[in-house]
Length: 639
Image (cartoon, rainbow, N blue to C red):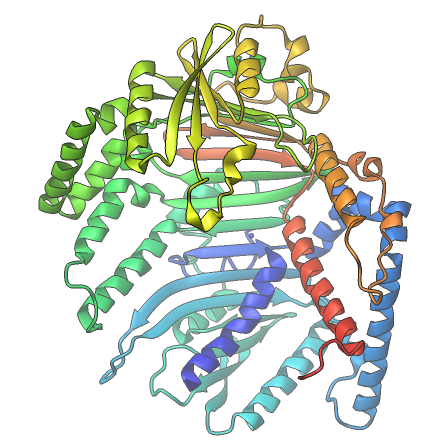
């Protein structure tokens, strides 16, 4: 129990900083071991914060209407902050608080990086429960506030040592020319993880494994060649990306995650008495390889602010000769002719090339790799069902679908109805696909039906979900508000949530190639048309201006119906007009290119990694404020 408690305490600082940071080759990348499996960095927070002021979210925040709406909440928060600071000053004056609160507000973080160097488990000698061996590393640059941080952290260590006397050991040494404080739990003996704290320059390095600590601090003192930045795997992604001025960088080795999974399963098989003996752990390893999940060598990504735009680049190192299973081969370029089908006022669309037919073969290959005898037995049973239904899953379902997929959606109309949407899929066998779906539906014992409908000389197929007689739903059918429907047009399956959606999409497939009437003339998408490379294998677009307006109108209506607590100073009448926000938004577009070395992607959006941080901070801050208000109002009394 002590070990687990200590582990949680050791992970807390890393988790806190990771949630705040969330991915240029900063100093930590040049100090980490080459086998590091995950790395994320924000190398220059000061510059990033300055560039963020040009983004859509920053401009929206500065709007007078937005400021007026949040002013009461900000005043409330400021008041609570002032009260807390005054109490802290008094506590400090009385010797109850070891820090001067006015010094704490001067604390800054100029850069931040987090890494996972290894994931493992080890069985202690004479033990019956594996212990975690997880290498976590955090590096932060505090700049001119380093002295304040150092004082706070050293005081915290002293307080912890006093409170946990006998449960932890604290040792101070020197490594790589830096003062090193090592904290280790006393129980269980030989617990592999701890917390090492070293102040390097104006920053701090936190690690959980002693072996990482010595190597990383040595590399900080004098850069070595055996580092993450110098590793061939890292280079295979970093050479495809632009690190100059990046707001955030990220690196991941997916194979290391499967290594950990395999190691954990093997350890469970060898030591867990209740491990199922029929489960073939080595077979799972073979199945993962056969599926192609081991084909992913490494993933790298960078984010930049370019004026008011957030630009993301990523590269998945996946050499074509190493691709098997689900990812075998290279996807052909997407035929961009589909753009003439997409309505001009669509709020989003996507198109991609992907071989559905290869999925069946990959799944069967993985099953055989796991255990050929078991696979033959399972395929035999499947064959019996197929014979009974008079169909072949491989030919009539997976093989009936092609490798081209297109979808789009129209603006949100109201909160009571779904927006118009459509999807188009290349098909190889129309009749076989319909018959297969109908036969598969019979397995539901009447719950699902594939019904033929004739409308204006066109044949439609409606997927009916009959939940009226299902006891759990009390005679209600939640699927009545929409009816998935599809038809066939020129070798494509055209689908939607209603017959009218499918009819309109089918009619658009007959139109002439005139950009004036399709998405290519959409003001928000027009800027991207010439940028999309001819070799793109997938494309996606979202008109955030229109999309947000639709959702905002619905939310505005709902807010008028919500009774707010009198202690929460929110006035729905002051809610900003939609145009106040949407005038700063624009369309987002992304595409991918599949090549011999791997898959690269590019995206432009009004939102960058700051959105995740802001939403998280808002949820935490809002929850804390409401908790404080309810407690103050007596709403949290013990009963």
